[in-house]
Image (tube, rainbow, N blue to C red; front, side):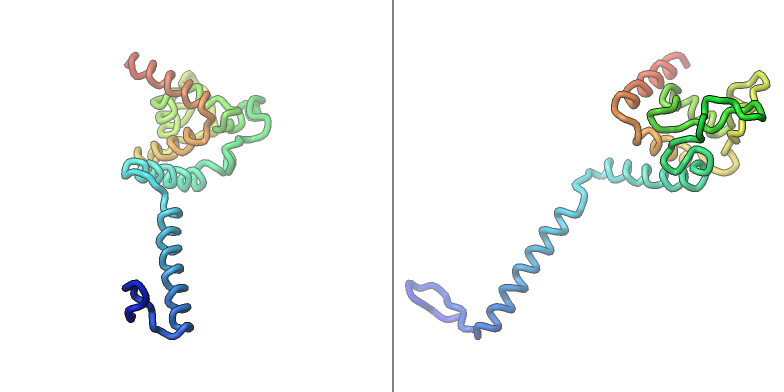
Length: 168
């Protein structure tokens, strides 16, 4: 740098070097801005929630999607009994009835199986996952399922869960 008119510093580097420097400066600024844009602006709690949902999605795909569908759509004609007398796996999206049940009931069905929860000789193809998934993994799967519901279904299920907790 050398002094120029009005006391301003003038870059005396060759034009090619100045161009390379300018490009590097712009690239650095864009890289920093891109990192800020691409990094989700989540709080620590939100990052933890997103991690639980990702874990739940993984466990769902590994243990539930085979029957309930990769997109939570359930089996066809899920409200009509099979020749075995059992019902097909219901959808876990808003078109099903999963959101009609409290968190406690959904946890127990997932952990122990539908027949164990319903009782009275009820038969179901839904097994319990007590020996397969830990309690926190079951909760992660249920959190993932809930996260896919529209606002109306989530609010309804929250009220059902609150009523169930009060009754306990």
